[in-house]
Image 1: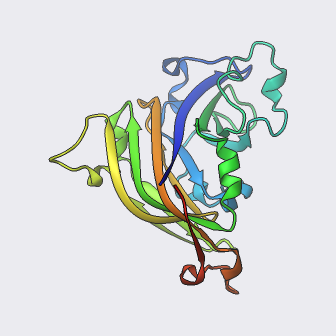
Image 2: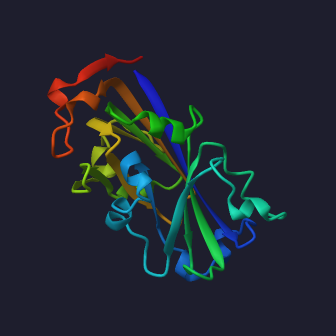
Image 3: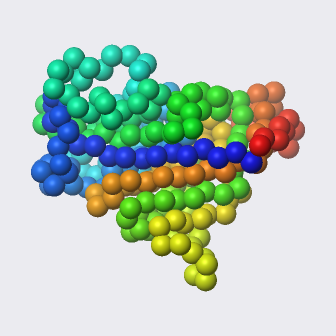
Length: 239
């Protein structure tokens, strides 16, 4: 059994990259912000599919997703920028703004892992399926458990299926902790499977701990429609 922890944080800045308290940003930016996990296939397409399923609220514009350290962002050249020290090498960051061409404020949704460079883990998922048995959902705002998580799967041609799971439904009413939700799962996460949800404006921190018990190699089992026959896949135990 192996665990991958993904920490999700939100930062607001001005156009110089100086962090701004969220209470000071305009009301149009004081909205729930989407985040999109896994799914290297959709990430390579700038999250075209997941940003359609979990789209920003009106008045908020999705600009791009970057991997920290992969190239020089314009904020690297801003001497006063203090967002740079918060974003770590290998993090994946969604960038939103209040205007698509002449922004006044940015919102950064940071996807970070203390275990491994998050983008390295994504890249290693190509041709594999990671079987998830459990996900622990931690947050500083339990109201975020009421936000549905979309599970989206695609084939090579962008055709996708989508379903929703509500985290709060997984809470054991007889045995629970106030600050952690344990979700028993039976999911195969592939390079064409994504999870997406919203971070409420009142929420500052989300941590998702995925527990994997085995990895399936999918590469030899792709059919002509871009789908995978998992029944013929090779299984590797981990942990």
